[in-house]
Image (cartoon, rainbow, N blue to C red; front, side):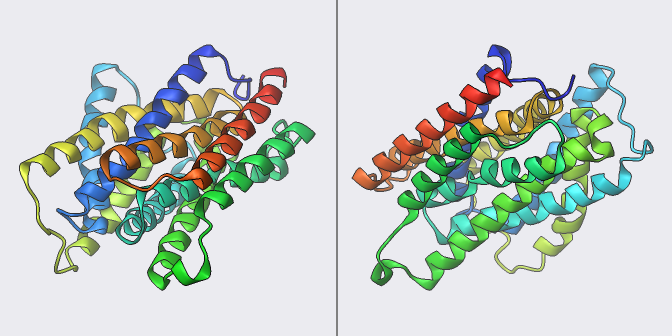
Length: 296
């Protein structure tokens, strides 16, 4: 059964993963000081391949690319590369708070797409209400008067939104293409290998591919590669392969909360009444969506 409702095991992991992803936005912005966003994406993808292969070797997991998953795997890798170029560049232009709130509209695009593309993952009245509440909360969080809205901010918001579309497209591919037969490690390797091969040569074309690097930034980067990229995404792909797509990704609405929290704690981002109201509506949307997910 690959589309069952979320249980306590999946919910526990998804909450931990949401915390890591919320923290990740801060870490990426910090590491952007030391290296160009494209180089950071390329190096992270390339280095993450090694621990994934070691994990598969020691756990005796078979990596198979000739099972009909090659084409969708390559496509998912290209989408993965585009997604993270857009996301990491957006963090050069914008705050962690805004990027987190916009990027994690992904469950909206996934749930809407799943309604049309996945037979047993249709929209219901509760899902529509929950998504509406959450999206309204996100819009409220990023709204600013026109006189405060710069062109740089516009591109930061646009890149983040496009990145969320790419993530949703990857998630849908994992449910409807031959990739759904692949183990999570294979799915992730497609994304890492393709993005690394494409982006690493490109990243060297930027004069500032190395900026102001130091030991602290290197340690942060290593944490990203091992904990968030390898352990976190393998777990997420496993949950995606076993549970309802919309139910799984509705938990991603938690990530803006952690992103805002870490942005405030670490980056000193401003949190006002508008942000608090946004997070309340977002949490309410999650609750409504998952009430339905538990009874599907």
